[in-house]
Length: 289
Image: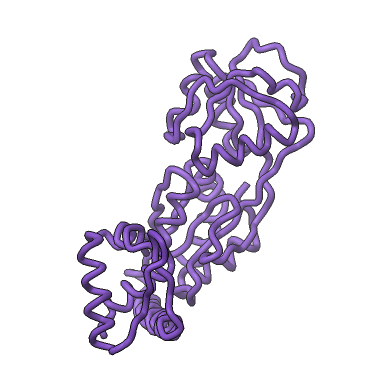
């Protein structure tokens, strides 16, 4: 058994479908299925059993998955020690959503780089929470900054509760703060219908008995402010983006009652590289707001 096979086993156990596991590993699904079958023949045991359209880990498979994770963790730790021993080459990869990146770059990173000037920090830009989760699962990032909740295969370290505000075109007649009831019938830029993020918005609207109108549905957050600037809609976004919106001439108002989301550092269930652990220590002593 080699490291590649270990990664295949862990990815398949985490995703519970060959298709999703193959996608996370950037290989074809038939190739992954063959690799798992070959490994099972090599070991003389069945690691995964079919269950509907997915797979479940067998009793023997659970033991193999546990040991595979431990082996991969040990390899990561050795690599971290090696990297940390050559600070001029050390790199920390942080996945972040666009909404939270300004706070990351403006507050946490300066404090971290001041203490660890030899570490090169690379921001893995992700379109949303799912992108952050996938970047960590696919090992494109060591840690991530996102709002909660995240899947249970990741560990989260809450940093703060960040306020959600209403960003509107100038001239819109609204009180400050804006009662939640005023969102009823309001034209909003919203995530795509059926997406995890949209379900969270819909749950919030249902809680307060309001039904906004989706003026635009998109997951491309870089395009969210455009319709607001054009006067076509308003937008619910984090307080951390208020400065950017205000510079664009838009009006930022709090909601009543206040709505907040927990922002956290997240990572895989394994030992963190030393540079990532040091970043977490710095972040937990500060704020991403």
